[in-house]
Length: 434
Image (cartoon, rainbow, N blue to C red; front, side, top):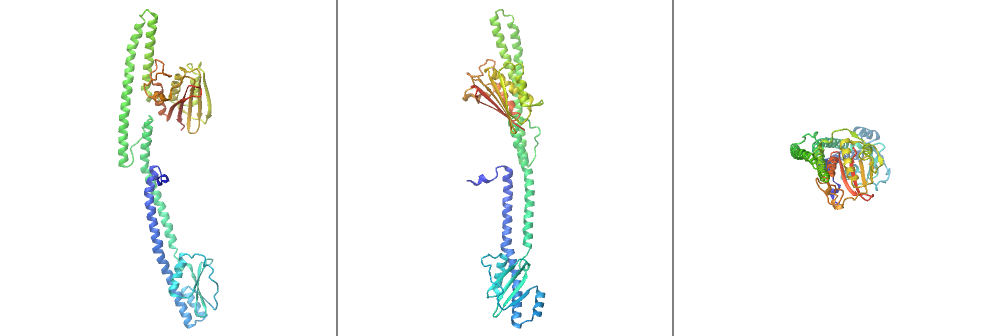
């Protein structure tokens, strides 16, 4: 077992520990010094004062034989009750019980003045203390209030020490939380940007170092966005410009008399148009967050009943539904892309939907040829094609799964590929249910 396993893992917890641990140690040192030095010294002084009074009274009574009236006068003047006995009034039956530091101090001071056997009894019901001293032919009992050998200020000091410590700790935690908040916001902004989400609400705040890191992050974000925009604009421009010569080629093929050659050329032109459309679609994935929300179950049922999928063998099964909504544009586009890919290579498709309090799970199973395990990660790369799989179609640009993955990242979603129980491929979509 390592000590670091028991320490806080987050920055706020570690910062609080760094501040609070020395503070607590400092308080413990102060308390230790107070109780081991100042308090004990005060107890000895109080006990010594009482013992001196006991010594004085005992000497006066033993030497001059004071009457009861004179003893009563002494008691009243020094708040010390004195009782005389010819025999010991009680036995010391508390020997097995450890005395408190107050009585230990009193016994120490008594032993410095009296060599005889000393009996101390705590009269807790009266909040008093009884001390019996043995003399030559008699016993003398002295009763006085416990407050004379103890000080209540130690409790007040301890109380204020704890209260002030708690107040300072709370204030420190509030200040530390405000200092950690900008770092947390920066981490969340970086996470959101990494998922392709907008972070327009992120503001630079915090200490100078945190503000510097935030400004550099925003500069980096702007450079990355600019590069992505330039790439998308270039791809969109090239795709758009290529449509014009393809249209001219399509018109020129109409003049060809051989039907077989004309049809072959028209098919090639059609395939190229479809690929260009996919390129344009890939370059516009950042614009899909606009639009309303829809229930995932409702969206999939509408797509299933769409004219493009109505005649296909598609089953939809809902295993759990706690209710949720997703971005309609993104979710519809992802499901349509995946179903289009499945219907090209399979004749039986099953969609399983599970919506719980944490995740929206959509699994699309088919009985097609599937994808080899070593290719399941690579197919998410843009423009990637595999030789022997569901991407065999000539019009395929290798962007379908890439577009789906990019779109899902904008709504805190992910996509993965597995082998299906139907014999083909399982496409699993997970979206955070917020």
